[in-house]
View 1 (tube, rainbow, N blue to C red):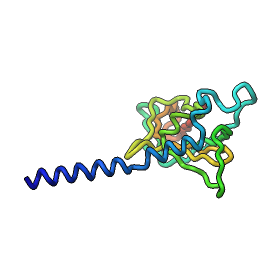
View 2 (view 1 turned 90 degrees about the horizontal axis):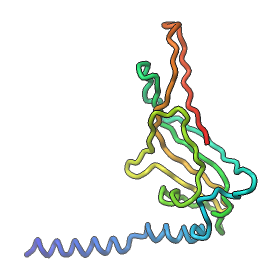
View 3 (view 1 turned 90 degrees about the vertical axis):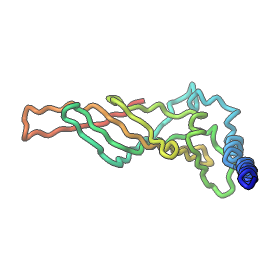
View 4 (view 1 turned 45 degrees about the vertical axis):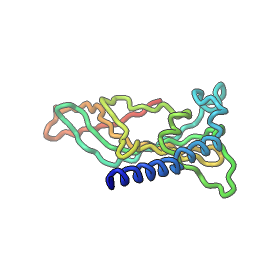
Length: 173
């Protein structure tokens, strides 16, 4: 009888916690603030007009391995994109940005950057996807993602042991 009562009271607490969870509400309010439903985000900003400048920077977290046998290298990095999408501009009294996770990224246009000679890559997802989107009141956007990529590195060992190898990571859109 005591066990049953504890289970019932725990069940009620879980239900109350789920009911009071504001993360979904916050996302909905933010989407309303950013007017997500009013625009076609399958199209890039200013479609039909001039190209949209997209800034990119890479911060290398680690070079994890270099394989002479496979002629590749693996590195973990933060890939950051910067662009402006005026469709996401929002009113702000204190001019503060809003930060979102991967759920919003799936609903808006983002640049289609890829690694040219990638063998494999993945976005880190412990404990959740390592993706961050920051939107500023004027529509400027910072999109950051933590990625591990393994890419080709054509090595020439004809001068071994006095050789030098250059491995590069190329990005394209």
